[in-house]
Image 1 (cartoon, rainbow, N blue to C red):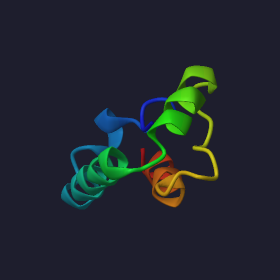
Image 2 (cartoon, rainbow, N blue to C red):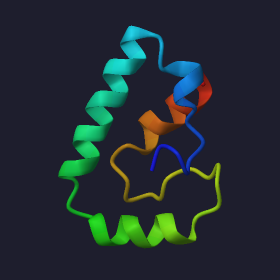
Image 3 (cartoon, helix red, strand yellow):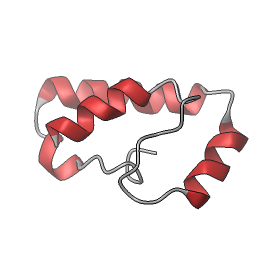
Length: 68
């Protein structure tokens, strides 16, 4: 999800607070109950688009895109 939405780990990954936010986001993503809908969205999404409305990480991903 982070990759397809345009979050750059190289640009924002060195800051400790952002590293922790990304780690927490990955945990939340793995625990999400909308796996099938997410996989379908990822298969059809254009690179750089925001996550779908059902994504619990939508706001965080928007912030990470701005930081990267």
